[in-house]
Length: 281
Length: 293
Image (tube, rainbow over all chains, first blue to last red; front, side):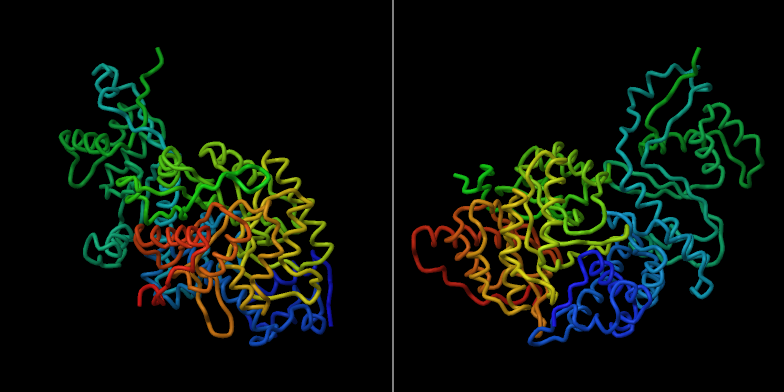
């Protein structure tokens, strides 16, 4: 018997079934599906094939949906998946897409709400660590996709008169994120990427700058004073004010002038700044 | 010489541009006729993918192939998406733009799957209208691909091939004939794949796709994860006999091997076309093991 509920109803119905995580039998009786097509009528919407029942054919689409979502989130959150394991990560994905299904033409931003979702879960192992790991991985996707801005060239740096630096402002590149954590999440990501040994996952303050150089994403661990200095610069303080705000605080170990030069040298070499803006006269 | 009504050229034998091959392509400048690009991967990034695409587009002809046009959806057309698609097409001088005959979501949601249409009069009228609007906005004809499908609606009145032919005629759009998808759907639904190809209007076809798939016994999944099977090569030869020289692209999207393996698979299509053009017997094909075995 042919059932023709109309294109709009059949699409809303099929989507409801695809996004329902119960069995197909349960899905057709759900409120959302039955708002479009009654459970009785639903049995005749799809034809069986020689080898599969109509529900088995629907299940092909239903199963592929979660796998596709998992694949997309795995791309953006490989370290979180590594920490949780395949099964727990899949469980997280299933719960996440129920609350935050894709509303975009691209899967690239599917995981934008994952850190806040992780933070809201009471039953996730080491939730606070997972939350920070997710924050780091989300920041890296932002760095990956950020608009390209050319780093400051050595010529541009040399062109600034020495006495102009104090009142000048340094503008970071677009692909630049400063991050402060209570756990060594960047070291954990390094462990997953086989860059360093596994860190102890105990609480420990860490500071990181994530950035892109030559279209490749990098991370650099920072000390707290280096983080504060970079933050002040990124917030638009003049070089002089940013340095004063850091150097007038007490640090243990103390920050030496030589270190300041080393930081600036490293940051310039890594291309963290896009422009130097002299003070307006 | 082009066989289609818009004069879109037969670009030869291309492959899909995939990030695992970026280094190889930029470093070696391989001799390849053209690349097909998955549009959505380049719409919202200012990073490496776009940087690489810009370089590829300087060296090779590029065609945009999307998965989010959702041409059959009952949701409003996403003009923000189209705006970005149009800009990308201009940026890379896309020879043409294609997507699928399907819908991907409704009520503002996206399942990111190529979901099947019921082939009804209502669906046909609806899709014709949308294709016209999309083409008006993009200021160019689009080509729609027959997607692999795993179910059929009891309400369907038209065979898929007749539906897509009628859509192309009425909306004045092109067809991207995916030969592997014809085979996959014919297996899943039990129709004759050659009859399907017979129903496709020659002057509408601007491109063909080839790919590997995964046979689950009870059904076939269009996974793009393996070599093209011999039956699909034979079907491609048949399609070439019917449709003439059409730009052909090999898709490989999962378990992607090295560039040369993918390109080598694409170049097999040339053999089949040449043999067919000379009316020679089809090339001997060895049974190829599943990739990775």
